Image (cartoon, rainbow, N blue to C red; front, side, top):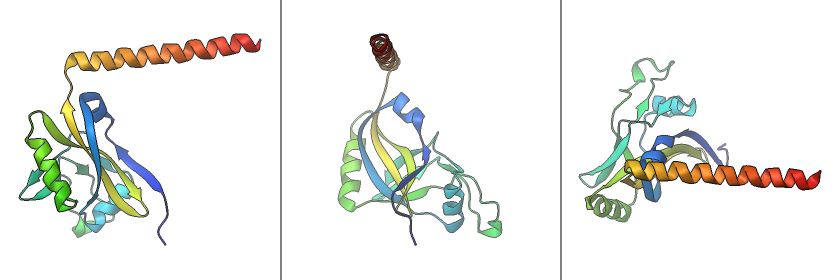
Length: 158
């Protein structure tokens, strides 16, 4: 019996720091059996991964899936390209967006949805250094406002 709901296995937090995520897609991943078992154990790294459209198919590259310890001869290359499962219309749309300058496809997270392995693919635009500084300043300002609000609530309660 498959479990219902979503369980996040791995997330690429660095992607949101380095890129503006314009759009995101949910897609399936074509995996071998030992790769699925290894991902379920959380032994996957999305840090240096990216996706590209090649011959009408979307491939994710640089995603490291550690070999499954009990896998013996069935283990595959940890860095082998994995095909993403998308509709043809979505692939055409992604290809058109990537053709625009500065857009790239970045895997944002891998999760289990109703027992099936899914990958969230983001259409991203690279950030410049000043954009990152602006994000950090906004985050700090928001944190300071929340801290001041909590402090004022505590003072009113006393």
